[in-house]
Length: 277
Ligand code: PXL
Image 1: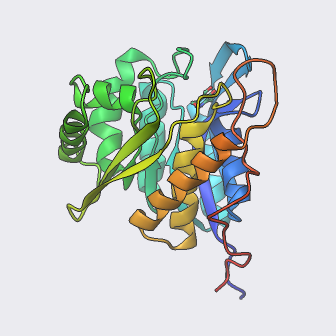
Image 2: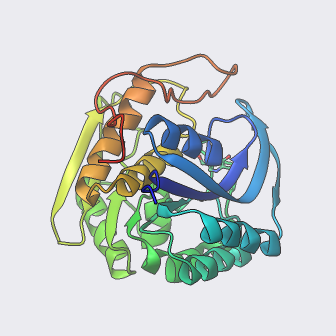
């Protein structure tokens, strides 16, 4: 039989305006030449002005989504996005442990950039104690890292300490995304702590724009795509950082307020045309 084309899985919420959530993940998989599959956990109704409603899917339906993929597809890497509540987190964990969907990138989605809650507060502990230990890579932003590490992060030293705390919770590799909110800021530095103990900073230009929806989703999806391609974690996180940087810098106009990043943005690093080598 011919070898299966590389496939990745997003376990996430649908966002009707296509800028974030599962849609941003699928744009990313496509752009990285990886076949995208999707287990939908929840759905939000929204546009570039904000989110106006949300629902969660029945756990029996989520179980069936996982089963159907496991019965037929060969998913080489997965990522999680919006998991909404404790029941859904546990449903995802149960299924992830039941089947082989490859390494898991956990994007610990708590709120949107604009403050809409995507995870019930009562579920933080389940996320921290039950999902993080399964993570091959966890990609919290500044705010999520503070919540999960239970500390304030004011300096780069604090980011290092928070990453170690997340490692102590059981995540194998950690990428904490730096804060974007300091006046006059020219650069943003993310901190990466690998399973081996190696650590490094990934610094990019701070690009002041309101077209950034889906940045975190796309970063974690790109890491999953690169893992599905067979890249190691360090290569995957370096490519993902570049991928979202160029997607932010090459703006497109979609919607009237807070728009999406540009998944078509040209430039390094373009994926191989063929994934079969
Ligand atoms: O970007 C975080 C995010 C994740 N998942 C869904 C979202 C958003 C942000 O809007 O709508 C479904």
